[in-house]
Length: 417
Ligand code: AMP
Ligand code: GLY
Image 1: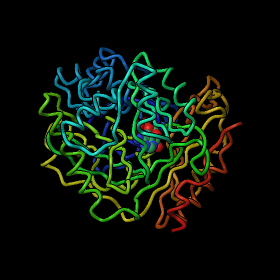
Image 2: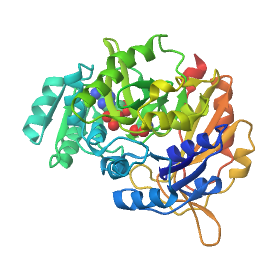
Image 3: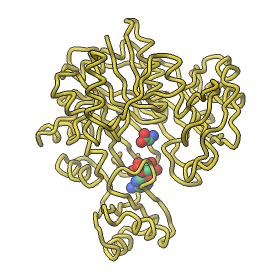
């Protein structure tokens, strides 16, 4: 199959890596990609958010399947002209991607579909924000309505900080949400617009620092599976969250074809949705795909073509996977980029390790340098969490990037339990 993958992060590197592991060989082009992806497959520069540029590239490449990784191109509507031109596209239309692009749209869909989620008030008015904060009480949860690259949400006991955050995003509107307490779970579903097929639950570590301290980030690490979940968890989320959401979007005339990311909190009063994303999560994808068995491209194509019922349901290996993200100095506030990275050979020499590049580039003289906030995702696979953690951290310790930081507690609790 000729597969065009759009995007440049560790998620796309993980997608490419897993496609290369299929038994059937594929011709893969990733655009724009990064230095790590370019070591594995052909890459091409492209403005990923330009529907016409991506359509031209897909036509030139004669793609059998286009996989759109990040949210920005999806929300910009890159999937629509591709689909109109007859390409099989894994990734929702602009209208369906609003599930991620607009938190109020997502709340409306959940309300219409009867999907459990926290109570919320949407407003452009600071006095209404204040009133909603009083009604819900602390801790306060304030969310910017549009895409904000992981920076739109604040969860804090500090009313002043909550109000300042709200004030910054009033123009586009903010959601004041009920605080939900409990462990977080990311569960992905492939959707063909009508049916859903669950992948395996993962947990992401969103805060920058150990023990869930510091600011929210895109995600500093992840592990899968989640042995502490009840056996019927995946099925319950399929029946109560994913299927009703996909049914509702279809009924509204905006079918969702692609990856439905259910961001969940397991509260004492049941599992509730805190967010939907319209694409694979990063860094959860790096661990989830590591455990995926069978043919990956076949699953993506079946979803893109509306035939998920014709392929076997995704299955996952018995082992576990842990990823630790190495981030630039200053991430998430002000990442310092352009610094030299060394030690990757020693890191990948650690058994059962692979590295997905998140933001790397090669200089004119051939040096590998950092090119963004999250730089590398080190992935370990093992029989136990203790072993996967040991290998992941052994590999991370071999990597040198001046000023970089990573969390030391990824999957620590599950390994100790
Ligand atoms: P989001 O971008 O909506 O996933 O929010 C980022 C992070 O903020 C989540 O991963 C949670 O850790 C936290 N969060 C979001 N909404 C809530 C909520 N209603 N209650 C508690 N924590 C939340
Ligand atoms: N890991 C969180 C996200 O992908 O949005």
